[in-house]
Amino acid sequence: MDVVLWIAQGLLAAAFLAAGTSKLLQPRERPRHSSDWAQEFPPIVIKIIGGLEIVAALGLVLPAVLDLVTVLTPAAATGLAGLMIGAGATHARRAEWRPLGLTVVLLALAALVAWGRFGPYAF
Image 1 (tube, one colour):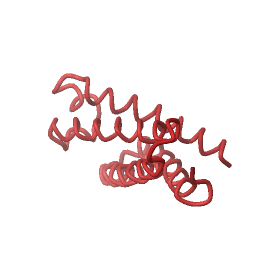
Image 2: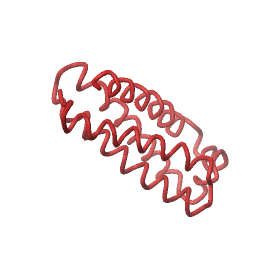
Image 3: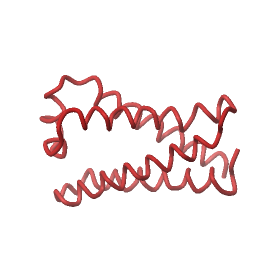
Image 4: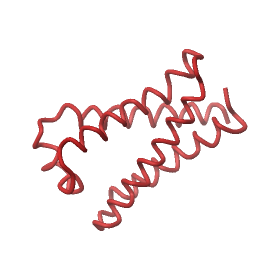
């Protein structure tokens, strides 16, 4: 199970590092035009979400790899699960079903990592 958790952590970290980086590095108006959901939020909120995604991606892997404050790994997974609940609510409200499917998968992976790393497979 430890290998499964590491794979989930790696997939989540890669996905959220890419998503967060794109939200932070795109010009101010571009994210609002590239995604339907982003039209509801001011650009600063998109940047904050991107920053949170990057911090969580690093938190999924670095504490465990460096063996420092390893409780940050399941904490990062819990934070991402919360972020995905908010994203799921936004997509469901807007009837955006394709992104909602990916959101549910990411939520499930984050919940798995949080459960495993806080519980029976902690570091």
